[in-house]
Length: 78
Image (cartoon, rainbow, N blue to C red; front, side, top):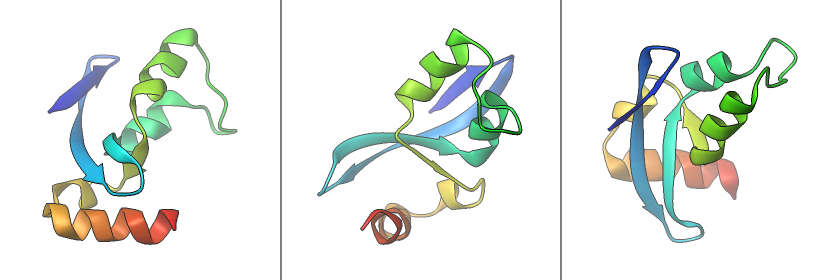
């Protein structure tokens, strides 16, 4: 799966976490493109796109097997 923003495709993954249910995640690269250097959205479109994504991981991490990815996210959130 992927999401396209400003003509660039960013990978996404759906994953089920016991604590949160089904979530959609993407890469920090997408997150960086949505906000300026101060972490501020520049448009309503950026807010809308960000609203779909529950968690951002590194470009390499999004390719991990599901069990490893779950471990990273659950370790970070708990």
